[in-house]
Length: 375
Image (tube, rainbow, N blue to C red; front, side, top):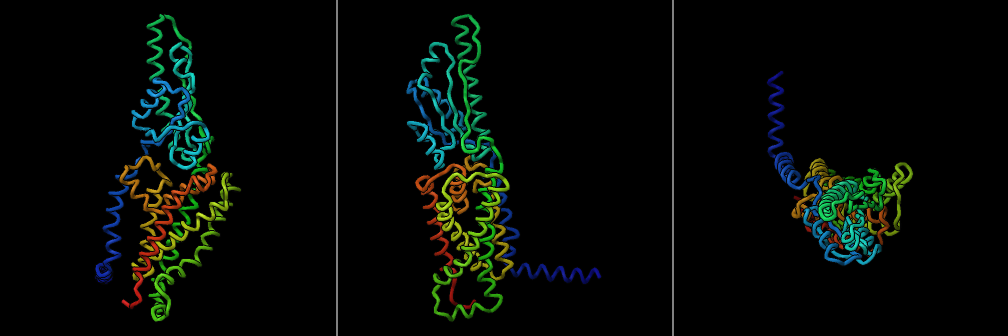
C-alpha cells in the first residue's frame, strides 16, 4: 500500500510541476507577500497629516506647531482660517489632525496664566486617534513642565496647575467604536472579494465548458465582451452593498451622515473596477481553480495595504504608492468619508479620479489579454 501512495504522490508532484502558474503562486507569491507586508505594515503611526488653525499668529504659537512636527509623528500640510476649513480638510482626508491655537496663547504664556491648545482628531480611525493624542499630550506636558520650572525660578512661588494644557477633541466617532470604523470598510472588502472572484472565473469557465468557441466566432469585439461580462454583476454588487449598509445601520448602529445617492453613484466605478480586475485574472488563468487562487492572493494585499486594518500613515512612502494602485484604498476613503464625515463630491473627487483611472487601465488590460483565438 505504501508503494501505491508513493506513486500517487509522485504523479501529483509531476502534475504540479507541469502547472507552472499554480506552482509560481504556491512558491513565489508567498515569499513576495512576506517581504512586502513585513516591510509595509507598521502599527506605529507616524507622519500624520496635520493642519494648523493658529488664531494667535505669534512666534510662540509657530514654535509650538514646529515642535509638534519635530516629533516625527505629524506632518504640517497647511494652515486653515477657521473650524469649517479644518473640517473640510478632515472630511477630504487631506488631514487627520487639526491643531487649534487660541488668540491669547502667547499672552497667556507671557503673563503666567494657563494657556490651552486644542487638538482635533479624525475619529473615523481609532488607531490614529490614540497615536495622535498621546504624542501631542506628551509634548504639551513636557513644554508645560519646562514653563513651570522657568516660572518657579523667576518668582520662587509655587504655581497651581500646569501652565500649558491640551484639550483633545475627537470628531466623527467620539466614542471610538470599532464597528463605526470597520463596518463601512467591510462594504469595500466584501465587494472586492465577491466581485473579483465572480468574474475571475468567467472566461476560465467558458474555456472549461467549451463555450469559448462561440464567443470566438461571434462578431463581438473584445471590449464589448469585457463590458458585457461586467454589467450583470454590477446589480449584484449594489444588492450586496445595500445589505451591508442596512445591517451596519440597524444591527451595529453605524451612522450614515452623508449622501447615499452620491455613495451609490461613486460605488459604480469601484464595482466596475473590481469586475474588470476579476475578468483580467480570468484571461490569465487556464482553469477556474487558478482563477480562484489568483483572487485569494489578491485579497491579502487589499486587506493589509488599503488602510482597512492598519493605518495608512503607518506605512512607508513607497508602500503607500503601491497601495494607490488598489481600488479598495480609494473606495475606503470614499465610503468612510461619506457615511461617517458627511463628505460631499468636492471632498472625494480626487479618489474618484483614481478609481476612474484604475478602471480604464483594467478594462484595457482585460481587453488586450482576451485574444479571439483558441490557445
